Length: 282
Length: 268
Image (cartoon, rainbow over all chains, first blue to last red):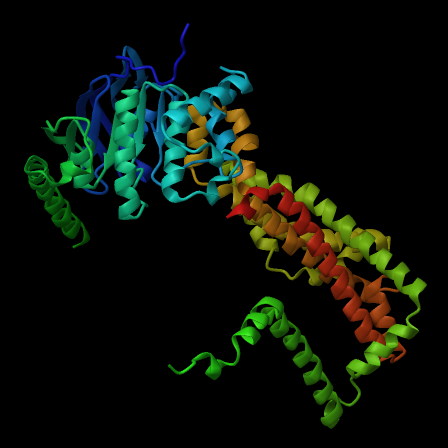
């Protein structure tokens, strides 16, 4: 028997099937997602990128089960996880790392880390602690942080803790919602490498939302570019830069070429969004 | 080479200062000294204020203080303040939770609160006579009333401003809707809840003094008013100081309890 939380597996396929989402506050009828179709392969690192307000977080929230959708359906492996006639149903098989962090500030790092297994009653406390420590060692988080409260950690370390808190649940996919947006650029680049390392070790499917192009190309196997209002998928770029990657990749011609392609696609959209915004104001 | 230290005094003296003289404390003591000096000058040299007791007169009044009487009055006031405060917590906290957590309850309750809240609590004094025959219940009602709104508003604010990511994360981990309030929302709201309780304690003291000044049923408010009636102003000022001290003690008490419930915040 081996319920190893870091076991490589070939689970974690996300199928997004003709998903639309219409916000209808007082009949305003805002179409946030329009007929999105995409498939995230098991073990793939997929980055969703687009200008702000294009509905990328809405899509992530729909996958996470925080928001419902108005058309289409989303599957995780064979299981349907979202459809118009389903209630929102978050689960430990797809855990989100949030933009501003969501560690529980009133719990110590260790209590935060064992939170999932304890709530689900999956493990005894001792087991959970042992498992957490094993993962901490493997993913390089110092045990000296265990008894600290999250607010006394650096912002980078908070994200590290949060990623590990997600992984202890052995989720099928990791959903990251601009997790490094609030970090300074030095910490951010360290966290990029950290996340890549975590990805190499765990082989989890990762669904990563951002509006930072360089981040997207550096991290992703595939970059999906989304358009604004209505949010639909415009282009998919395969990033064939070999793994494992480190910061040296950032200086290669290959990286620049991929980035250039992505820039062109996104720029068009950003311009459109910009002009559309102007028109709406006029 | 010129010796720079000569300009600034000997290095020994500088190190001595840094180690043994707590300048921030010196400045704080200075602030109090200036206050008392200002008070003395005002009373001694400006004719208009000559009836106001000097700091010295107030200090000397300490030795004439009828200690048993004052202690009894302090006890009476404490009873009324704490009684009203605890009833305020007992009712205000659940109400604050309810209208912070449930939109429906908020719509049903909050507007009527907003109608009543702008009325200064002291303006309720005449009406309380109609509600309660016995003075003790009037006084406790008033302190309760003073404590109630700060507790309700801050609890409500604390709860409604919890970052939505926290309950969302908890939901992913498997925390159900029924436990969400207890496990996530309340702990996250605690700092602001205790901010409200500190304010509430302040209001309770304001109200108790006002209520006691209106009657002859004892308490520190009554004691101040009594000394005013017999024109013993040093004792009036002294009693004011004692009331301030009592209020401060209560505030520290709330702070200590609050620190226990929000101990994670002290590590910031």
